[in-house]
Image 1 (tube, rainbow, N blue to C red):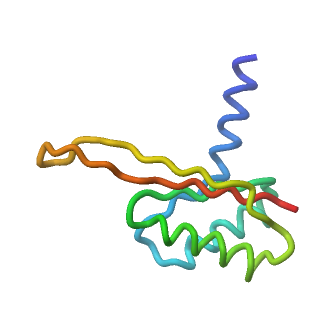
Image 2: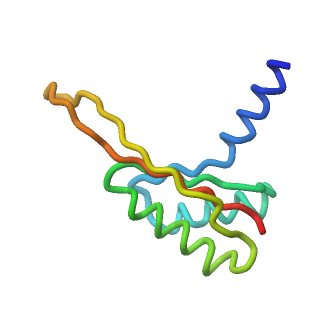
Length: 103
């Protein structure tokens, strides 16, 4: 039973794209590849802070240009977390998770 839950959690983690400083099209390609070659039923695009707008753009380009009529928006989850930076100050960082699902 615990093995099945761990397997499900791993399978879900396999279809996550974390947005960062790499070139924009790398992330779009990553999302498209998850759906086409790995046959994912859903892909989650995650980003924090200044990369949130890039995550939105990646999701939109993947859905409207590359996989038109093949995927749709499954949901959006927003959050923020507080942590201590290098200088010892409390900093709040926003995050987003955009779920794209196969139609």
